[in-house]
Length: 131
Ligand code: THU
Figure 1 (cartoon, helix red, strand yellow):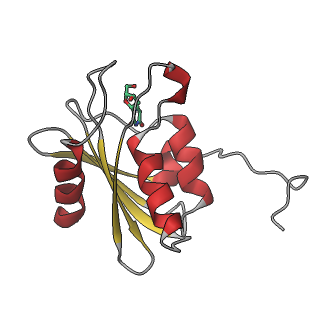
Figure 2 (spheres, protein in one colour; figure 1 turned 30 degrees about the vertical axis):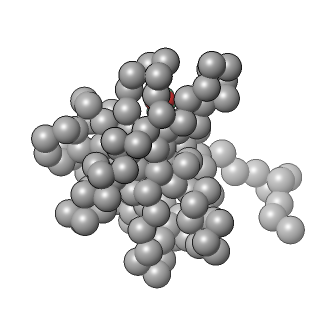
């Protein structure tokens, strides 16, 4: 897990956050143990901003990964992933009850949660089926 936090910390320096100044680095581990880094990418059209977690998810999916098992997130103050990112992670994780979310600030790892703790009622519907 040390490694996951290190990858997120190293990626964070590449975050593109000229509007908020809030740099976020993420590292996502898939079912094969591969690690994908991501950073937040902001835009002058604020709604177009992409969070670091979803940057990492798109990289995993691009490489054929479909099932993540852990995420490390590094920010200045140990922020928790936003609700949209928690929903996206839930879709593409092995098991939300065992998926580890490791939260760190600039100095150290602060705390760890399971994905299902942070989003216990993720959206799902019998009416919207996978094909
Ligand atoms: N941000 C993330 O990258 N991940 C989150 O889970 C929450 C927020 C980014 C979006 C924006 O670029 C900046 O942090 C401030 O909200």
